[in-house]
Length: 413
Image (cartoon, rainbow, N blue to C red; front, side, top):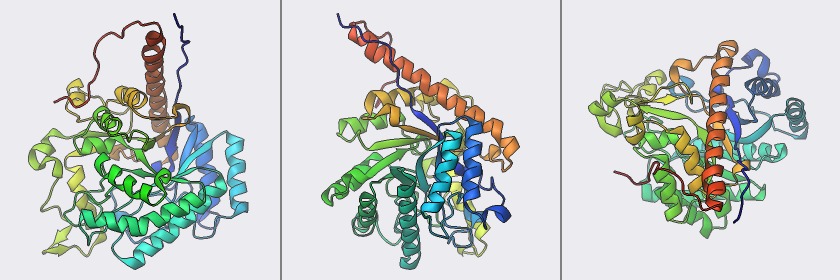
């Protein structure tokens, strides 16, 4: 009889630095931009996480989308108005070492297929700066969106991806990086009616895009940064989604995780369905998009009328909601990842992304215990799943002892 020792493997816990946009005041950080990173590293140590996901974005003075038009304003913790050179990298690396914090990856979440060529070039140029910074900091991945060309159909967007996004992946490859795509459909990104404004929103398109990448020699550069909140938004559940990837031979695609939930509002779904609010949102005035950028935030009613983001650990759930795919079953999420995906678990990152509206507090002292609690919850859930997996799938399995019960099943309807 073979005896397998109990050896659970835990994932690495991190936090996206957009959790608080202005941890360092603008009057301090604009003339000394790396102070923002140093102070976030210090804050991460207080949160007792392993890593930060370093948020990069165009500086507010350079962005094409006003902050007031966004559902969740981004954070340019990594300020790239000036080149990120070896001296800047050495300063950041020194702070990371002093506080025993790592960087999981750099996150730049923007529309890389924007239909306006001038705006697209600005975004691509910025992404190149992000790649260079990632290489200097010794991280192996950048996280972001693909986006969507609003002037083209979805099939035409595949061609656009091959022509204009694949060159970015080739630049990532030259720097030893992978690009991990978060699958948010970005339904309120524009005042148009499209729900899917990031074409890499589900396994079907991930596979189509990866096939394009394989043909052009950058298959290893295209990976997914899975966020279960977006699956809930589209009526999916994690276990079935992971099972689909395994069944189709693409369970290697997921390379990291955002830990963010979604709680479906049954009343909102009753009124508008999973397509969200389509008319009379307030983003259009007198038959055309409003001239006031703040009104454009109402486009997000396509999402927010039917759901609200969850910061892990802050919500109570009716068990029926798990079965209806109306909230994230965190324990099964972590079990399914281990059971169905092709992962190097000990080197896989769980990044807490904070977008729960009532707790989006831009005050360090008030936010600290909230994030501490959520990060601790995330760590304990992962540890519990790791222990269950090791006990059931390794220790018991080696001795031929059956697992009790059935558990959550994929494709159940």
